[in-house]
Each structure stands twice: as structure tokens, then as C-alpha cells.
Amino acid sequence: MSSRSIITQLTKGISRENPVFVLLLGLCPVLGVTSTAINGLGMGLATTFVLIMSNIVISLIKHLIPSKVRIPSFIVVIASFVTVVDLLMAGYLPALHEQLGLFIPLIVVNCIVLGRAESFASRNDLFPAFLDGVSMGIGFTYALVILGGIRELLGSYSLFGLKILEGDGLLVFVLAPGAFIALGFIIAFFEWRKSIATKAKKAA
Amino acid sequence: MELAEKPHLRYQKKNSYTKMAGPKSSFLNLILALGSVTLLSAFSLGYVYEWTLEPIATAKREKQLRAINAVVEFDNDPLAEAFSVLDGRRVEDDPNALVFYPAKKAGNIESYAVKTYSDQGYSGRIEVMVGLKLDGMIREVQILTHRETPGLGSKISAPEFLEQFVNKYPDKFNLKVTKDGGQVDGISGATISSRAVGEAVQVAYDQLQIIKENE
Amino acid sequence: MEYFAIIFGAIFINNIVLSRFLGICPFLGVSKSTSTAIGMGGAVLFVMTIATIVTYLIFQFLLVPFGITYLQTVAYILVIAFLVQVVEIVLKKISPELYRALGVFLPLITTNCAILGVAILVIQQDFNLLESVVFAIANAIGFTLAIVLFSSLREQLELAELPTAMKGVPAALVVAGILSMAFMGFSGMSF
Image (cartoon, rainbow over all chains, first blue to last red; front, side, top):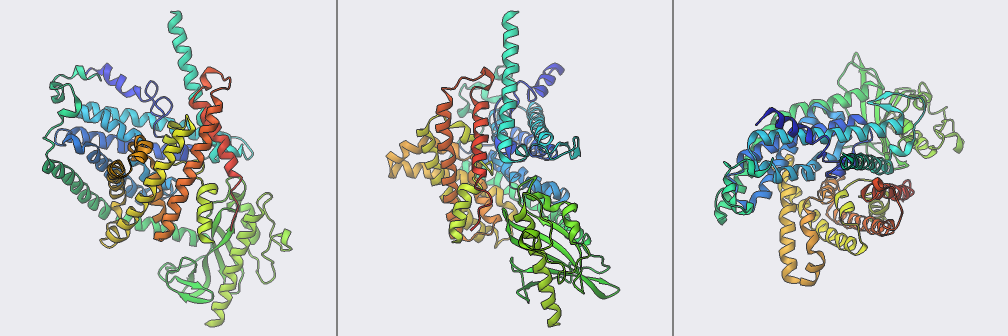
């Protein structure tokens, strides 16, 4: 594998194939835990760990699993790593664990994780599968931090817990409706950028 | 990563993906594969569970101690001596009971940290930790958990609101909000949440009086 | 009265989609027309109720007695995946008509986090079996209500003139935000 293709592999998750803003996958935690940038970062890293580990294990055992029980076996592998994250966070990061709550066990039904296991890790060798996990994880974390940051900035005039502006902020962005609205506008921004890029290509 | 780039992979021999993977799909193989994956996962999780048991217990303990430490001073282990009270009687493990943590200095009880609550919050239960001296004076009030509206009811956790309870005697300081004829300065836009905090503190005080009488 | 509080709370105050953010994928994915939205709602009602009962029993009579509650996530997701398969097979045999209506939605349900979410929530909130069943049904109704309301709004949205970048999902998300705002009016109601 050339170093160039490694780089393309790694960056695809951030822009071209961003799991959240472009592929629209795993939106439940994206909306549910992003009231602050810190929460977004924590959730993103937890999901990244699960993505990388399950991608590695699945690419290793792919030849041992008969196709009919492929999906259930993958789900068990993923669920195990989710439980590992759950236990480790409860022990070492109790405050964050409490904030993320229900959304940690729900990583198991995050379409990104099972989607990558099924469509990538089960068809590729260890190294590309690992890279794919890293890339998708980074893309997911990036999306969560962006959305969390925007909501925190508008909703409480602070970023990563630091007060940026005086005052209470636009409450709605901390609450449930703000999550939907902020995500809507971010996706619109990505669409708009894409349309400009295609226009530029056509002109050239 | 196009599949065509990887001719050495097994599944390339056949075009259809579903027909490739590994062993035959006999019933025995299915059970064997899924069973061993599950067993392996269960055993390794058991190991991780054992390993994290202690850190999780420590984290829980530290969290409780921190909450107690915020409202009283002590040199004993209040968690070991804690007891639950419901309607003036000591009970075992009742979700509706208040928890009393005796705070001792040199072996004498000086005050209690009381984990109290009110179900009259805007969105359900508000849990409050109150530090009460034996003569009934409120030392400190801290909000433990609540689900009030962020930006409105959530301000009950702010020091500006909680300061007004410090060093007050509930027999002289009326714990109702000013709107209801009491002396608690409610948060504007969050009277219900403010009222609930006052109520939780009042309950803790009342229960402490009954306990003291009985002893 | 307590059951009424559970039902009202699950449908309106803490709506599973609009306030708890569970089941967003089908909420956005199958809400383009009202009839498919109703179909999805029906499938969720069916699976959510059965899954909650089965996982509740497994938790109380298998995981708790053996002290292996840390296997909750693994056990639950396996049971749900298995259940969806069984429901599909049984439905095909018993009621081909119902199968025709709900069948296409069933495979999507395994990865619907609302199912697993409700199964975990009833344990977290210490519900008994009957309360759990009521909670599951109410949440399924809440899901159906949200997705049906949303789909009829989206049908209207098709006719609106929008900037190209806002068309489709972005506009739908903003509409969902406004719908969620409307549901916030229920918060603070208590019984």
C-alpha cells in the first residue's frame, strides 16, 4: 500500500465520506450528546475506539465465520467492545460517562460501526481495515465536535467549557430543537460547498 | 479500496460475496462459529469487568464523598455510617428515603449531610445535598441531580441561588419562595424549580428534628 | 394515575424521537410519505413491545441471578436481532397481509436504536414488567406520532421553494427542530 493511498484512506472520513455530514449515518448520538463540544469529543473518541477495534477483529476472523451468521457474529464483536468502553469510562471518566449515559451502550446500533464492519472490514485485510476505522472515527469525532462546538457557542456563549461572551446565550441551541436546526444548517453548508465544487469543475 | 485491486483475497475467486466466506454454512458450523464468538466475548468481558470493578467502586465512592465534603466538614467515614430515613423512621434501601451521613469531628457528631429530594421539580425529581448542623442551621446546599430546563431551571445549581440558604435557621427563615409568602428569592422564570429546592431543604430539616427527638 | 403519567410522559413530554433522539435514522429515512411512516410505526410498535418483554425477562431471570449484568448490551442486541428474524418468519406464516404491510421495515429495525434504547431505559428506571410493557407501547406510539406528523410536514415541504442546498435533509431537519419545539410545550406538565 503506497503512502499516498494511506493518506487518501485517512482523509476520506473527514470530507468526502464524512459519516455524519455526507453519509448521514449515526445521527442519534450526533443529536443526543452534542450540547457541548466536550461531550461531542468524548462520544466521538468512544465510538472511534469501538470502530477501530471491531474493524481489526472482524478483518482477522472474517474467514472463520460462515456467511449466514456473519451479521450476528459482527454484532457480538461490536457489542463486546462497546461494553469494554462502557466499563472503562464508568471507572476512569465517571463524569463523562454520566453525561453520555444511554448513548454509550447505543454505540452498538450506530449504523456507522456495523456498516463499516460489513462493507469494509469483512472484505479487507487487517491494515486497511484499521486505517478505515481510524478514518471513519476521526470523521465522526470531527462532526460531533463541530456540532457540539456550534451548539455550545450559540447556546451558552462558551467553548469547551470556557466562557467566550457574557450572557446566557440562545437557549434553544442547548435544547433538543437546536440540535436538529444546527445539524440541518451544517449539512446545508456541506451541500452548498459541494455544489460550488461541481460548478467549478464544469467551468474548467 | 476497490475489490479488483486485491486479487489475492479469497472471495475474489467467486463473484458473489455471499457465497465466499470461509467455512460451509452447515448448521453445526453456524452454531459453532456464533457460539465461539459469543463465548469468547463473554469470557473476555468477564475479565474486563473484574478489572474495572474496583475503579468503578472508587469512582462512585469519591463522587459521594465529594458531594458530602461540599456541605459538611468531617474526619470520619460518613459513607460507612450512613443510614436511611423515611417519615422519621430508619429504613433499609428505600428509593424514597432520605440518606443521612453523620459528619463527626473527633468522634462527636457535629452535623449531618442529608441527601434529600423533591418531586415537585419542573421535570421530575431534584436531588439535593444539605449540610445541617445539629442545632438546625443550614451549612451549605448543593444540587446533586436535576432535569430542569437548561438556562432556566438549571440555574438552581448556581452559587448565586444557593448562597441564600447558608447560615440560615429553617425555624426562623421561611423556606418557601417569596411568591408563596416565604423568604427564598426564586429565580425569575423558574419559580417551580426554586420552590422545589426550598421544599427539599425543609424536608431534610424536618426529618432531622424527628431523628433528634427519637434519640 | 401512575400509568397515565408513564404514557403521557413517553408520548409527549419525553418523546422518544424529538426529545430523547432515539430512532433518528428511520425518522429521517422512511418519512417521505405518510403511508410508509404509518407502516414503520406499526412495525416498531410490534417489535418494541415484544423486545422489551423478552429482554426484561432475560435481565431479571438470567443476567441478575448469575451476576452477569455487564453482558446486558451483548445479550440484548443478540436477542433483538434474533427476535426480528423470528417475527419476520412467524408473521409471514400467520398473517401474510400484515407481513406485506410491515415486512420491508422489519430488517431496518435491528439497528433502530429506539428498540435497544427502550429496553435499557426500563431497566434504568426500575420499572416492573407491566410498567415496562406500558412504557414500550407508549414509546412506540410516541415514535409513530412523531414520524407521521413529520411525514405529512415533509409532503408539504416538497412543494416549498428552497435554496438548492437546503432541499431535502437540511430542510427536513429544520422542520424536525420546529416540531421538537412544539413538543417542548408539554414539558413541565405533571400529574
